[in-house]
Length: 66
Image (cartoon, rainbow, N blue to C red; front, side, top):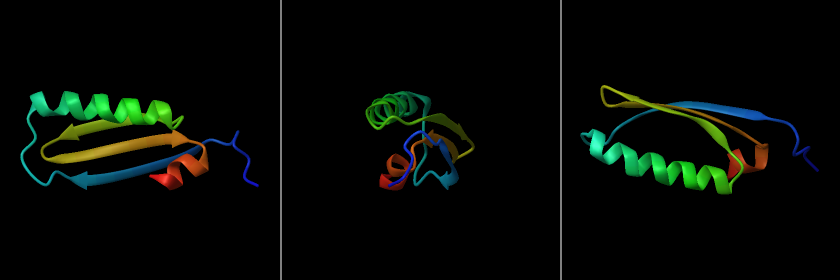
């Protein structure tokens, strides 16, 4: 059985499939925060020039479920 007290980290980059405007980023961030809180995940989401960088931390099962 995995140790749920261990903290795992997942880092990835992705390209936006279409133009992303500031007004659409806030609902995306709210949705991600809500999901992450429910899944016991914390992290960071950055966006610039059509690219996202996300850092996620949490128990391995929660990250694997993503």
